[in-house]
Every structure is written in C-alpha cells, then in structure tokens.
Image (cartoon, rainbow, N blue to C red; front, top):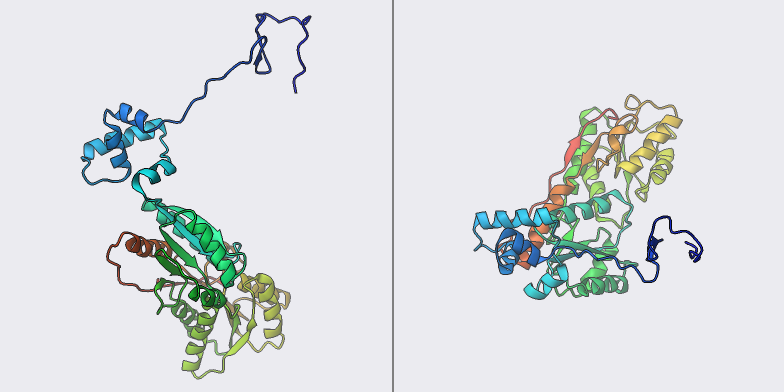
Length: 359
C-alpha cells in the first residue's frame, strides 16, 4: 500500500492536485470506463440499422450477402461480443445445449466426447453447459438435470457409459430433446461400433498367427467394456479357440499391470487385446519386467488410440475412435430435434485399426 504523502513532501513538479498512487490530492481521480461495443456501435460502423445487425447475428435469410459481409466486418473490427442474455430476451431462445455426464472427468473417452460435442455445437451456433452428476443414481441425475434446466437448455447430451446410470436415467423424466452418447447401436443414440472395433483387434492378432490370445477386460458396468469383450469372444470362438478372459480392470494402467502379471506368469499367452490403451500400457510394463520382447514374445493391442499411444515403447497397435465425427453426429441429431428438422438415418461410427510395432 502507498503511504499518505505529507504536506511537507515535495511534489516533484506535480501540482497541488498531483496524482499519487492513483489518487488526485484534494479529490478522487475518476478513470473513464470503456464499455464494450454493442449493437448500436456495430450498426453505426456498418451503416445499417440495429435490427439488421440483429438479423445478421441470428442468420436471418432475408439479409443480402453484401450487407451481411459489411456487418460481419464491423463486428470483427470492433471485437463485438453479443450479449447472450439480451439475445435470449429478444429471441426467446438460449441456443444452449446441456451435457449430462456421470463418469470420471479424467478418462480419455468421456473427456474426448465432451470436447467433440462442444466443438460441434459451436460450429452450428450453440453454446454448451456441463453438469456432472455427483452420484450415478436417480437422485444425483435429477439434481444434475435440474441444474441444466435452470439454465434454459434447449437440448441435452447424455454421456452415460455405465449401466447403472442408464437404469437411473430410464426413471427420470427429461422435458427437452436429448441424445445419448456411447449408447448401444440399437438405442436412439450415437455411438462408435465397439463390437466391430473389438473384432478388428482380435482378427489382427489371429492374422499374425496367434492362437493363445487373452483379453484384458474393462469394468463390466461400462457398455464399451462389455461389448469389446463380446467382440473378442465372437472372433476367437469363430476360430474354435479357447479364449482367455481376465477379471475386470478399472481402465487404469495399474489395473492392466496387475491383470497382466497373472496372465503372463506361466508364459502361456502370446497375445493380449486390452480393452483400452491405458491398461495396455500396464501390460507393456509387466512384459518388460518379465523380460518378454514385444512383439516377438508377446503381441499387444489396445483400444482408443490416445495421443500417447504412438509414443509407448514399442508404439501401440490400437483401435481408433473418431470422436470428432461422434460429436458432429450427436449434435446434428440433437439440433434436428430442437429445430423440428428431419432426422438423418442413424448408424454407428466406424472404428479404425491403427497398426504399430507392438503387434
């Protein structure tokens, strides 16, 4: 803090009302406030009416292209940021989509899904607000939904990969359009074809001549984990092989390592398909500790293609999920419901096998 200047102190050239620490001696210095530009300023800069600016912002079809371009240029030059509250008052629409999630915010799949949904929503002029259910039961979900409804969301994306969350959601009434992300292919939602992804991974190992393949399972309460297990079993059984399936893990590298320690103790397994890349990382760690060469002694395939997968040692063969496409399809379906537009045919997003050195 600045100490008060005594009357005896020299002013060093300042007048008796010199500025010191932001204060004028003898009176309080006022600093004029610069308000952000509004519709009035944009209209003046573009030479149009305020109503025209509003129509441009709301994509009204009656605006001529040259007028729209002039207004957009003025918005850019003035760094205009529309006031959402004012817009909602004039249009009676929030253009806000809510996301309800009940999974860990640190897991790759849910985080990537939220990012993809937000990007897709922004591309079509919608905002995003997120509510995390503190507990995956009906009470927790109703509380999260209430917080979204209080923000006047026009639709809701439900990211609910756990079965217990789906069971709870079935008992909850949602009064706005909704789309489920990571649902089953036969549900009214949007998903990646998990079954096909698991079959691609298993076929790849079989094509390399492996017949003693084990599957490191994810948590059984998650839809993705169950379906990836089903895809693995379908391919191995089609080959007449006796499949080895582990106890369930929790998606972490630590659980993958713990499971691998049991699978590899007797050297009876030559290949492992892991339900996700993080658990595959744990498998690679244990293989190294046991002196197993990858892929010569043990081939490893993961699922997700997390950004780090290409930098594991050796680089990890895995199944890539196209989250950007998933988000775009999800938002397209939800916006179609919000705006009463025809729904496009629904199909799961196709996964892609990414072959690297671990197999």
